Length: 201
Image 1: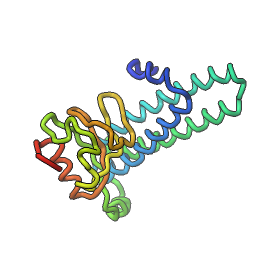
Image 2: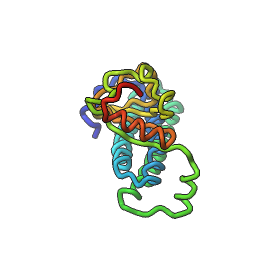
Image 3: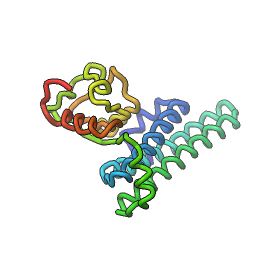
């Protein structure tokens, strides 16, 4: 079944828009899955499990919408293309979940795999914004987060809703959970900024 809180939003979306969101969702899941595995981060792994369930619901909704459209348009080839693409996105999401699930099952990754991850200078991290944070009530552009910390916000979770690839106009607020990538030293500074009343980044 579709999550009742998502159904009104999905009802208004076209199959094309649903596919784009599924693509963004699956890409984010792959990035987060490797990060969860590398840092043995169960919080990120749990987010991936939630995203995987959401993508499954979206794919079922996509199939229903495409079926309804093909009755009107008789364009079976286009409908099949949508269904195949949706199925591919779901397979990517399932694979990302399998990676993350090794963390949830407390399975130690192979040493060679860990060594290959450590060759990367970038980290992916999850952090929540507190009411006292300098980020609260300001846009990404105002804060110049990428310039000041080296961290790039790749996604934002607000309640049950996700914002993929937030831009400089995106307002941040208390309770938001941000997912960012960048250098390790930038991660520590941004983490402080999400919880402490700093005067500037």
